[in-house]
Length: 470
Image (cartoon, rainbow, N blue to C red; front, side, top):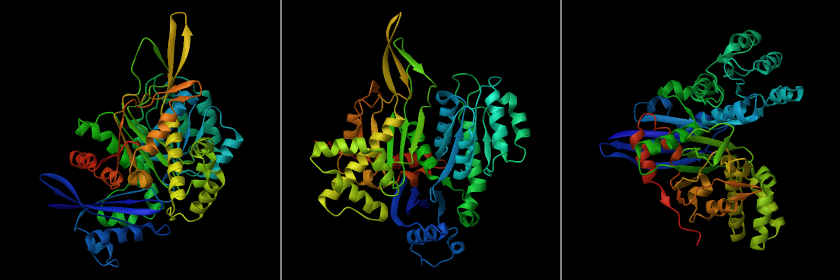
């Protein structure tokens, strides 16, 4: 038997799991959570590690080396904050956002065309960890790319810049921005309609490993255990990507992870099926997609969730015969006390409604839609975004969805989203709902690169089927 430990350092909690690897596969031996020590992430990591190994919590990290194979990830201190710049919103900017989010980042700014003074001022205020700069096909538009390069060069931004735009002007971009740290990679869209996300993803990951680790105080862990961290969302992304490959009964899946600060939506299904009656507008999105919503969270982002999701919340309160005031008071309370758990039936109901709102708006932004239009050849459907109709399994993760007893917090908001304005949302048609009951997805995501078959097998074995809402 081989001992394997996986630890995920979150913004609020540091979670860890002790796994045993045998010839029959991977099994969970122990799981625990400890508060994340924001001022020094290593302390919380050490507490989780000593707890899993049943050692005194003051044991130096060096003395724990060799007692288990160590893997870890982190989304603490805001995770990987990326600003995305593209040329056309429906094309290169959308690809920049997809590349940033599939690399495990949170997009803190999204800008197209020529950067304005207010755009630059906002970027300087945000000070992202990475700037992903794209625009133009190879040999295509260069005006905006060079203009934006000049403006960025004159800014006070100090973060690394990943240039993934028009290859024909890459050398000019480097020359214009020679005072900045610029890493050139392949164009996100070398030709119109051609998606090339992977090279930019890899550069973002390299920067995370080389630069962001020291800024998060994780270098001691890296040096002690010779183990490189992953951004937590990237770990989950790679698990969602690997499950259908190694577990053939689990094709066409989606996962929704509601945290205290963000809601992540993952899908692994073909994004567009060619048809005589369906026309795709914009890019064909990748089979595996992640979106993250920084205004949708159950504690840190509770106020922004109430603001962004008030239309949905107000309608649900009306359906349930509840008043808005008590919900607003509850939001104030949980935003002040991030560890607060509901104690009454009303508070449990409010938490459910907040979770529903997270699912509703995360799905709205992740899932594509159809609009009817008429051409000389007759009626056609114009598709934007990703088609999720073939998704067969939806997995709920995160604090609320992992603990859910029924599928209502996911099924109810998705049903209400079927017709959104003039657009029919391309929602899963007949999905089954599951809970990541032991909250293992981030921990197993850390293992999937080295142990893909074993990690994906345990991931699906650990899922619990959720009862229908009735």
